[in-house]
Image: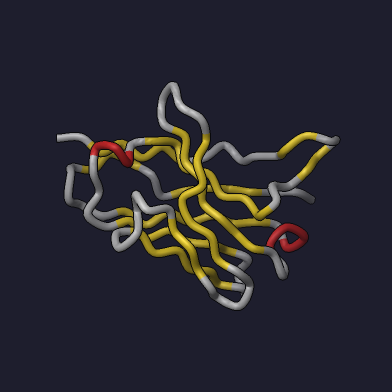
Length: 119
């Protein structure tokens, strides 16, 4: 079964924090490079952070120093700790592996979780 379920989004004020979670099916998660993407209104989906099965991480310049990606291999779950949030972080956040999961020949995405940063 193919499954990506993101959660943890919400409405926060600038400077506050949120922790996102993504539960993935084992077939997706095991030994995969997992990632968080985000898509702001009217914009393309962008890669935010990645983490290898061994824990090596990479971040987009726009979030470096503020966001932390982590994973729990026993729970098939990847997390995104977001601190010092800014209005420009407002987006729908998605997790996936790299490369994205394919289902019937098309990229498969979960429903995402909406993060809104506003005063």
